[in-house]
Image 1 (cartoon, rainbow, N blue to C red):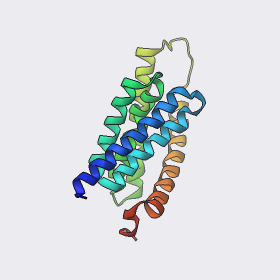
Image 2 (image 1 turned 180 degrees about the vertical axis):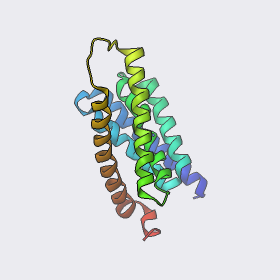
Image 3 (image 1 turned 180 degrees about the horizontal axis):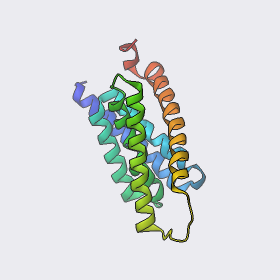
Image 4 (image 1 turned 45 degrees about the horizontal axis):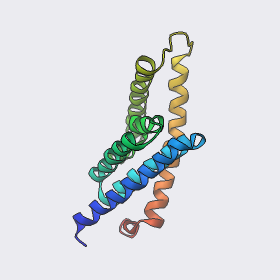
Length: 172
């Protein structure tokens, strides 16, 4: 099979799988965060198998399908606001040689995403004027949870690369 055809086929397959996870997250409320995070694994798999551009294609296609076809859009908004594109950003950031710079950029991306998400939540969806939340605690707690997520995501992707992917043998 032609290399470009293989990459496009994998991107289509991963898009469909990511959409399926997003669809199930919209009808199964207790599994929303986990299924949304799992949907991002298909973006990461596309990055591993075909490159960051194809990971971006998977993110865009699965996001569009989810916006059009899911009954509950909140998991899709969570996916679009951070989880969907993060594997592409993560793959680009982790090409840098300095670990401290990688973490600084990852935290910057997360906190910018959190800021945009908070603004949209506050201004467009909910009236949070009566809610007394210490925003610094939200950012601190969110950054801690994000660091744990990133660590776990790295471990899952290591498993995928070394145990599932055919490219794992190329990198050993």
